[in-house]
Structure formats: structure tokens, C-alpha cells
Image (cartoon, rainbow, N blue to C red; front, side, top):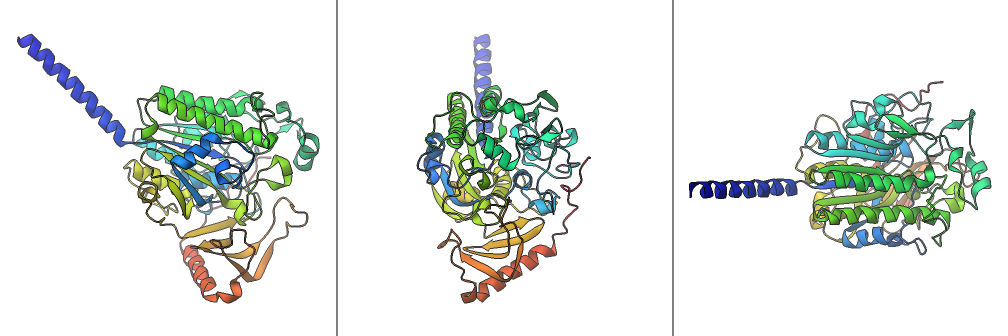
Length: 474
């Protein structure tokens, strides 16, 4: 009798312990941030594209939240990635350049170790962390993901068009376009390394299978860490040109090669969601999907679309920084959100949603979106800064956006690269005029005065550090 009673008590203890562990586990959410490269505001079916088929992302937008006024912190790669991972404007950590706009294979520096990343804060609080895909925050070992809070890394260290073969960059700019506008490029022409943890495991990386491999790594990580809390940073290096796609998706899209690429990325999202559901993690995981900047327009049909927005990558017009924003999973309340949001807001949102204390020993630019995601409360963000070359080119405050400097990018359209410091700022109401067509500055001097005051206050505590993109190892 005593033996049976002891066994019963042990059984009850085990059940209680397991229940307690499950309860504790469910209190913390898993997070997956998918950050694609150069995808435009208008490149998903749910954001208006008529011929690119994105059923998984469209379903996420329907079941979760679609943010229609969501912004990257920069219109080019390196600063936008630094901003997402640190929750800070890249002007605060040297990851925006005065002349060199992104890091290159011969860049001397990377993201400083003094910066705190999302991965570091989550890892300190028991999360398993992984970075998959494009890094572009320093290619040297001391700057790679494992030195910034990630347990595992599998990806490429910079853009997929970088590096040299026989001392020459293959197919830059128009040479690429002239050669490959009607076909898939040859992966061997780009000497980009594939890195696992801190070691190069393949060079050149076979980019025709890279999207498939990145998606598979994310699925594998979920499978191997289903009993732990995890954070996955999945940074696809596409649809940045050169465009690559696996044989399974080549020629499948009505939109051509660019559409093939987007549809393969969407397919990978579907595999990730399937794995989450298989392990009963879909109600305990949040997926964020967005892009690092707008489309790289000079590559025409090999570039994406900013939809109704003006211009694209490299510029501070809306097409350069306003990007799709989709939030899905856990307790997110479905809906379309037209309040302002930024990729910098992801950092404090994930911390608050996992009950982790915020970073309070430095200026943070991110603002938590938790209450909007869960309860549709109005977004707390009111201001967006549009930096280029370490200068403020434009500022949005509430619905109004003022331009103080305008400049095209990549000489597209031809002759547009000249920097113009405006004697009289331009002003647009983006709620009414998202295409930035109708200048209303003359009728609203008080709004320009308010925005100028915002800029003055912003600069008071800025103290920007050294430009870390400038120095090269020659």
C-alpha cells in the first residue's frame, strides 16, 4: 500500500512538474524575423501585386496583421540591418556611411561589439538563437553573428553580387543586366562565400539552391529546438540581384525570374509554418516578415516594384524605405494597421512580449508595438527619420513628410544622382498622397516649423560616432 502511494505521489509530482514546465514555456513566445533583400512595397499579392503568387505570406497577412505604413530605417543594406538588430538608428553606431553606403569584402570594420542585439538579449534570457542568410554587418570573424549573440550561423557575409574573381568584379551594374536580362545568371561568376558559424564551407556559394537551403535550415532549427524557446533571424539575400532560383521554381511565375524568386521565398515560409504546426508551436510563435529597403530599380524587370510609392532603393522617397510589414502568430489580433511602424520597433516589441527588461543604458529608437499587435491600440510611433550619408534628408511626423535634401540613386533615371539641398523644403501629406506628388509646403508653414523643432531636438543628443564604413583594408 505504501509503495503504491509513493508511486502515485511520484506520478503526480511528474505530471505537476511537466505541467509547470509547459506553463513556463508557454509564457515565453518564440520569434522568427524574416528579412528579405530589396523587395519592394508592391511585390506581394496581399500588397497589390497582380501576378506574383504568394499564398503563404498573403494568408499570414490575412490571419495576422498587415502594416501599410511600415518602414525600414535605411534605404540600403548595412544600415538597415544594424537598425533592426539593435533597435537604434545606424547613425548612433557608425553603421551608416558618409560616402561608402554599405560594407564591402575589403571593409575594415563591422557592427561594434558595444552594440546590444536582439539575439544577445534573448540569449541571456534562455533563448536559442540562430542567424540564417545575409549578414552584411562585417565579414571578419570578430563581427560575425556568433560574436553578436547567435548560437549558430549559416549564410553569406555580404551582398550576393560582391567579391571578385581574378581581380575583377563579375558583371557589375549594366554588364549584369545586358548579359542576364533574359536568363538565370551563372552562380559560379560570383565568388561569395557560404559560412557556417565562423568558417567558410563553400566558395563560391551555389546561389541557385541558396533560398531552399536557408529555408531548410530554419525548419531544421525549429525541429531541433522545439522544446526550447528560440529566435530565428532569417535574412534571405534575395531578391537582391543577381537573381537566383532553384530548378523547382525556375519559370513558374507569370512575373518572370523576379517572380520565381519571390515565390520560392514564399514557399519556404510555408514550410516553416508547417513545421511550427507539426510541433504545436504555431500558437506560441510570432513571425515577422519585412524587407531591408525598397526595390533596386535600375535592373528593370529583375527588380521589384514599390507599387504606388515614389522611387526605390537608395533614395529617401517613400519607395526607398516604406516596406511590407506582416506580423503573424500567437495572440496577434488580425487586421490592417495604418499607423506608423519601423523595423527598429521589432527589438523592444520582442523584449516586451517575452517579459524581458528593456535596454536602458543607451538611447533606443525603437518603440514597442505590443499593444497594437495584441489589442489594436494606436501605434505610439509618430516620427520617421530618413537618413542618407549621415545626413537627415527627410522627416515624417504623423501624416506629414518634409524633404530637405533630394537625390536619386544609381543614376536611375539617368542624371538623377545630383544632390540638391532645397532652399524651400517639400511637404507632403502621406495619408492623402503616398506617391509624393503634391507639394503643400506653402500652405503649411506651421507643420514645417514643428518638424524643424523635432530635428533640432533629435540632434541635441546625437553625438554620432566614427563612420565605420569608410575605412578599407587595401
